[in-house]
Amino acid sequence: MHLQIERFSDELEDMMKTMYNYPFRNGLIKVNGFTMPGTYEKSADAIENFQVRDDDVWACSFPKTGTTWMQEMVWCIANDLDYERGKVPLTERFPHLDLSTRADFSAIVKANPEIHIPREMVDSINYTANLPSPRFIKTHLPFNLLPRQFRTGEKRPKIIYIVRNAKDTCISYYHFTRILEGLQGSFEDWCNLFLQDAVMYGPFWKHALGYWEKRVEKNLLFLKYEDMKQDLPMIIKKTATFLGKNLTTDQLSSLTEHLSFENMKANPAVNNEHLIYGIKKLTQSKVDGKFMRNGEMNQWKSEMSPDIIERFDQWTRENLKGTRLYF
Ligand code: PPS
Image (cartoon, rainbow, N blue to C red):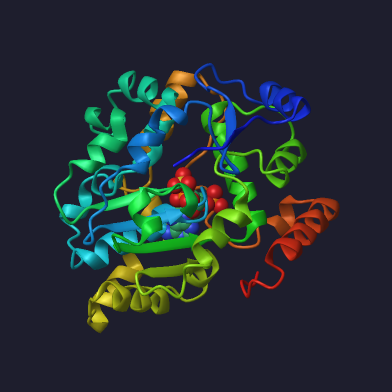
């Protein structure tokens, strides 16, 4: 695939440089319209030629939209609620394909024995490629940067995409980046980056719409974080049907319980405390916080100013006009 690489405006570049106080970050570039790590091109061929399998299960999302929650739900359903095997860290059961597109990732893993990621995952693409079937694969890649076999339709693995209210996603992403990457600058500055698509994997709506447009395909299930919050058993049932599984009433209630925010927060296999601990040690970030941070809808009502809310709403209306995706 021919990659169209663009740089950000000088103004945005300067803003990003002053906001990121993180020695391992390699900058950001635009690849086919999406904001990706500065080192993305090194992995581009391996991703493009990645051999997809029809029995794979792919969890796709923009960051901070509830990916981990959805992954745990999908993995448990597909593995008949095998909570014993579910004690293996989710990062191993359901590896993140595009992690190593960030050159800094290998530095992070190598320097931190306490991070529960197999050392071979320093090359996450090769590691994932060699897993036995059925593979469970997480990615934040937009649809147009997925391996070629998706775009040609040559392979049709199951894909589950999750999206979340843009304002809450922006808030969650802000806290995450502050904790892990020593992000400097105000929340307003971060919102400006988000609205200008200058955060990794942006533009947010273009990301969601790339998958939304494929929702008619039988191999794609499109979920919303807010629906999981409002009626988790309904979403579990819908996902089980999609995965070809039948859950008993008892299984449904035990999985609903297992996936509650409190239980996931306390579960070391999914709460990513090891990642936060290891990365913070490396970056010497002094900002405290948890991966399982808040887990609520409508955080924007108390965290955003009326002016920012209006800008987000206007931007959302413009992006979703005529798409039938409602937020
Ligand atoms: S990542 O790093 O991109 O994979 O992050 P991601 O998993 O997509 O998103 C993290 C946010 O999801 C929240 N979360 C949950 N909310 C409700 N219930 C459950 N069980 C749950 N599990 C994870 C997590 O708290 C992050 O959101 P915020 O708003 O920061 O709390």
